[in-house]
Image (cartoon, rainbow, N blue to C red):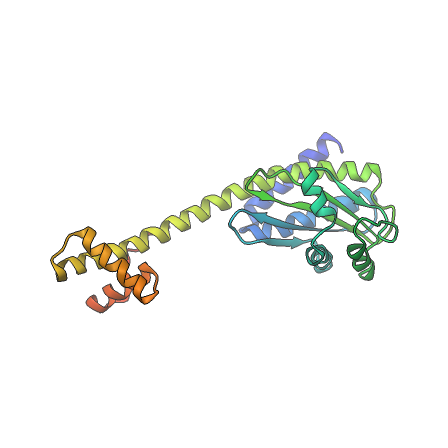
Length: 245
């Protein structure tokens, strides 16, 4: 891959960050672009899929087509395969011919049933908080030559840069949402404590402990109980301060 190719890929991928609007949209567009890049390099059909795992976050599955997601799901159901090996070693893992590879027999057999004949898994470098690999699926054997693998690795390096940026943006947005929810929850708890203080003529700490014991007794979340207390006293469901985005 030339320097011009790399610059073009980087430009397209960073453009997807600003245009996709959400993580799932970016991943779908990225895998679509990965497949297009490999098709352009080889002149033959290939599909691409990706499963993203993040610490304490939901799994995201994306693909260049429904067929790509279906083929990627085969590996998820089998629980092992080139993707797992690529993530473990940090290196591309190739199945040149599913009918001749004996490392993952059930996986290869299942792929053959869907018309897939060769697979290449290329890991992405995302740091310690996330992991993913680009899985390329081809309907012919011998598709992933040394040159194609080299191109796939180069694309994965560029894609890793773009995805790390996207994940930082998503993490910042999620943090802001979590902080907003925590502040709104805290408002209800503080208001409920104030009402308990007035009713029982006690300190704020004593009021909070009363609220905690009531929450435990009722097996109800603290902020949910607090919202009910405020609503019952004020007669207004809008119990929490509204925080603008």
